[in-house]
Length: 83
Image 1: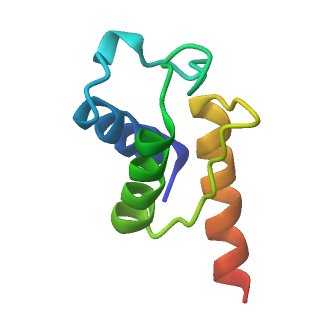
Image 2: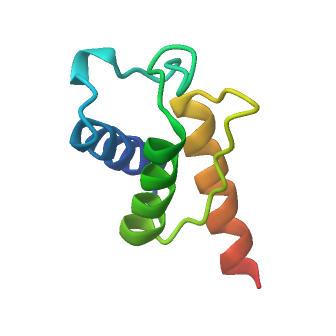
């Protein structure tokens, strides 16, 4: 799965959580810009796992951009395919 597909899916999940599409860009921070709360973060993690098979633990202690999530997703998928 390529990065653009992951980004497309990530944005769709965030829109389903009520985030306006115009607020979503690669450099968008989950907490700094979107102000996701812990429930929304868990829902995002669960949807990423359900839709893409990616198990990411998104904590609230460190902010992360949408592009970084895509990078982690790609790395995670590469690692799981090697084992």
